[in-house]
Length: 106
Image (cartoon, rainbow, N blue to C red; front, side, top):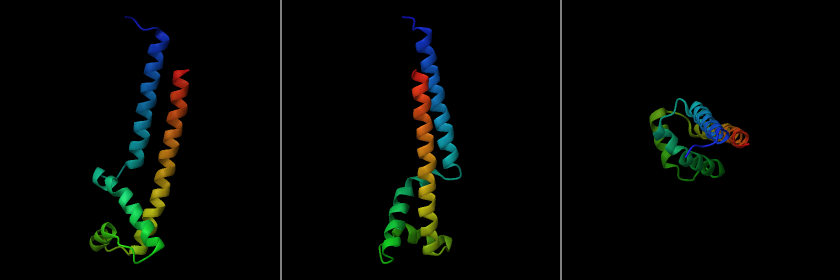
């Protein structure tokens, strides 16, 4: 069954939107390994807990600083700042994808 040209154009348009989204999110993750990315939620949770109570257990952060030599307060500040920046960048990419996807469907 042959699809109408408008439907085919919409499919191609949506595929381009997805490719652009993948490209943008890959740029955001550039420089990080998947193993590091997988720890981001734990890093953020431990950093938030430690910022609220510097006696909170932070096994991942403790392991990081034992090898990196960073100061926990500095690492915590960096992690929390990076988390905000990452969420903002991903949020913008998602918003752009949604807008462009909507336009591709029209």
